[in-house]
Length: 332
View 1 (spheres, one colour):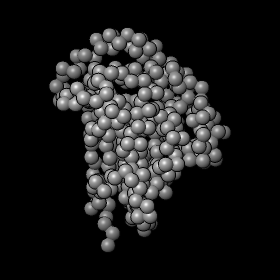
View 2 (cartoon, one colour; view 1 turned 60 degrees about the vertical axis):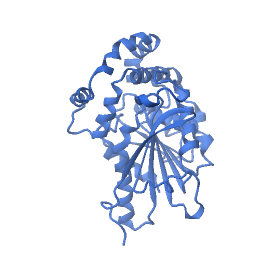
View 3 (cartoon, helix red, strand yellow; view 1 turned 180 degrees about the vertical axis):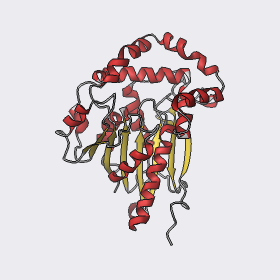
View 4 (cartoon, helix red, strand yellow; view 1 turned 120 degrees about the horizontal axis):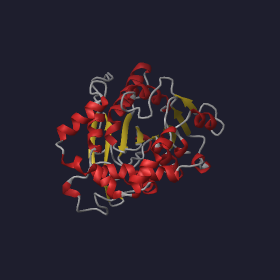
């Protein structure tokens, strides 16, 4: 007798590991998180694991995607039961960007980087490639998802992992892969980000005081601004972790670098058009609709679609369940 979705509860595990010698927080979700299920090696014909990797946007805290990941997994399990598919073991991985979450005190003096180091976009791209090679299981199939600048990272590393990991699809959600500085938000925030990035002392002066606030006060500030009733608790907790000086400095540093690096579309990002898909918003301050319309001419028919629910760019805050319903259509 098949287990119901209610009985097959989705568990979540969060760990700090060394990735390329640098301390990194990642999470994995699934109905079975046993060591054998998380082993890196492919198990041949008996491997029934479908691996989903979510590469965050900016801020790059993996906790922002916990509620979204649960919806994705439960939707997949419900689909299995509804149509009587073979029972697969789905694993949903998310990896934080370097220094986009506060590093625990007990590991701050080990590893190859300091808790106050700032990292640029290219360094974060390499970090994702290192994570995949060191920790991502080679399951039966692997699906990549990138959100916002995570889509850019995803497409950058795709050529290096496509064959080794049996990548079936690489999907950009609200993708910022071109002309970020020309977008509405890019023009609105560009000068401020550049000023804070070039004057790191100013970013420190603005944010140092939040390190001294008690966690409950930070959580209240976040809840007051986001609205506690409609926002998943994991999102609130992750947003609270942003209220940290070195996290703030890294968000600013990478954001400013994105506006410099992500300019005209680099066509090498579309090297694997057969598995590349884009999911655009219709009211996205970082990605004008014209970018998505133009992308339709560059990718195969049906590989570019637009959100129909007016979901915001930061969809995980209030629209994670809605986007999750659409995302499972990519996983087959």
